Amino acid sequence: MIQRLLAILFVLTALTGGATAHPHVWVEVHSELDYAPDGRLTGVRHHWKFDEAFSTYALQGLETTPDGKPSAKTLEELAQVNIESLHEFDFFTYAKRGKKDIKFLPPKDYSLTYDGTALTLHFTLPFADPPAKKGEMSLDVYDPTYFVAFQLADDDPVKLAGDGGSCALTLHRPDPAATGSTTTLSEGFFNALTSASQFGSQFANRVTVKCS
Image (cartoon, rainbow, N blue to C red; front, side, top):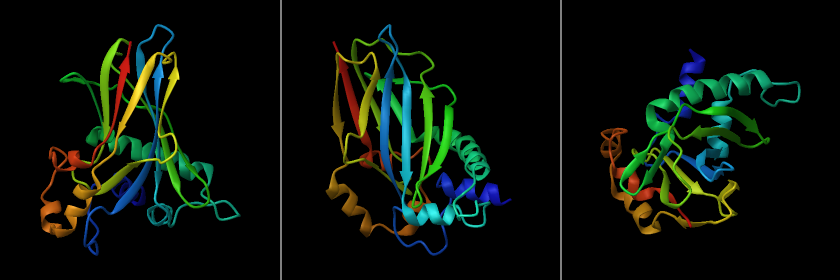
């Protein structure tokens, strides 16, 4: 039961009764685009660092080591539960080549780490049909319901890994004005949003990749 509750909290699928405004959780994003030796983009490796308040809450009541840190077992089990739950929400990750969606396979190499303050979720999303290197593609990270605010890290948030040397990245961060406009919207408005909503797309963090 507690794992299910934490899963719901961790993937941001339910609103807490005392919440009064969106977003409720903040996530700092680092990502890597992994290119194979043949030049095809094989997948995306995410590192999502959750805010301190949410991390503390998520770990309450779980097994710890003598020094008070979450045990390896706790982190392993929590990572698995949350990865399984995130599947329903497409891992908040959307890739396109032109107007065509690029589909992902189930995640792999997932884990949780704790730095004494915050939890970071690490996982790889492989592409079902890796796109050819030459050309342009885009990758968006956002929550359609804006329960969680994803933010690209200030320092080198997206990297090219493997054989991606001839590619160039362009980062697009959400418009601060759009973020501020949510303060006038009611909690009822956000409660009515679903994962199919496009409301949160205006807060998307986007990376565009062009390869010659």
